[in-house]
Image (tube, rainbow, N blue to C red):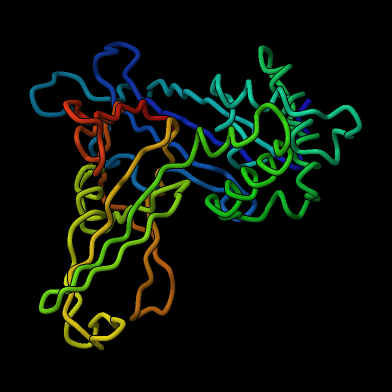
Amino acid sequence: MINSALSLRKQQYGIVLWNPHEPTQYINHNAHHHFTAKESDWGFTQFYDLCKLFRPAENQKRPLIENDICNITVFVQVLKNPTGVLWHNFINYDSKKAVYQIPNEDDEPLKSISLALQRVFYSSNTPVGTTELTKSFRWDSSDSYLQHDVQEFNRGLQDNLESKMINTNVNSAISRLFAGKIKSYIKCVNVDYESSRVEDYYNIQLNVMGYKNLDDSFKNYIKETNLKNENKYQTEGYGLQNAKKRMIFESFPPVLHLQLKRFEYNVQKDTMIKINDRYEFPMNLIYKNICHQKPIGQSCTNIYFMSL
């Protein structure tokens, strides 16, 4: 059973106002929100124009409210999640299988994240409480109400599991599932000098402001930028030089984490502001030939199914 005092709630809801004598006459609004201690009140500030409720809409014969009568139907779906974070990223088959193989014979559920995850997985065919998992993070009730950085927490969780997998038959399973390789490449314009560095990445931070969809954000991420004027590149032997810089994906992982930068720093207000612009992304992501390296004669096609 989930301790409601520690729970964070993700809720989806819809409200429908309709004429019981003519059900085709209705208005509806729906939304979703992650309720926390600081954001416990959420809804619609402008549901419908009051004066329009009592007169028929254009091309309609009857109003929404007749003889002071109308029906209101509410649909609510709530997910209680005491962790409020990303342990559910590990429920795909391969990562679940790897976590199951971590030896935990001498561990205690309230002190071992891997054992707590195993117990959650074992019980996940029915509604499962995650109090043990929460406590294995060394959290108390106040931590559950804090807004945690998703990227930071996820890397901490992955690091914890990776360390538990060392010298086991699932060694490096986390990096095989969640890590790709990316090259940072810089080439000077006026001299024969270039520099590159290949690194592992576990997530990709994509800009949202100014871009209409995920594809545009990806193109922005890998586009070539010019290093010039005050931003010249410092080389060894040639000093400051004009250069071109870009990011090149060497490989993608089986499970790809995308972090959408929904918050941007506002200079005028000296604070972080949330970006509420419309932003589109497909449920299936297909990126063809975006990898820099691929086998000769083969295309590099990456297909992902979106999970929010």
